[in-house]
Image (cartoon, rainbow, N blue to C red):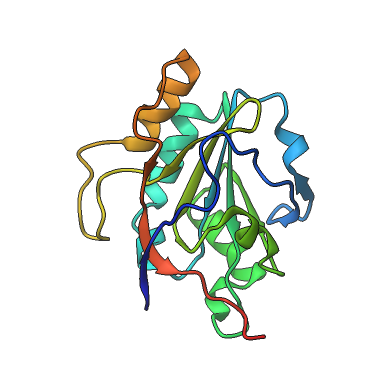
Length: 184
């Protein structure tokens, strides 16, 4: 396991890169599918990472508290050849077992992760209704899998976004396993 911290590629105000990816619901999803939402949260994640596993409850809580206004999209960009736990079939199993209500999509070419500049799992990006980046960073302040969160960073930032408040700290890095890149 290689532990990495989010890095800045997309800057505040940059527009979310478009995608067309297959979801665990066996449907294609594009960014345009979420145009009626007040914001979009894209989270690069996977099945096997202990940092993602530790955030499953937080992800479901995000959906429960914000999913009626903010589109929440999980994207798995890991190379499943070397990490079979991250296969599309296993993504479907995890989404069902963990009761994901948000869309969970596969990025088999890893092109979308590269466009966003995602390097770890989880690596969350919050965009406003105009698809402009307003926050890139952690879901909460529990930075190790066994930590317990005392601050719900993403929920607080979504509330600010929805109320029109400025998010003061627009980059607060997430920490997690490296995205498992394909060998060229």
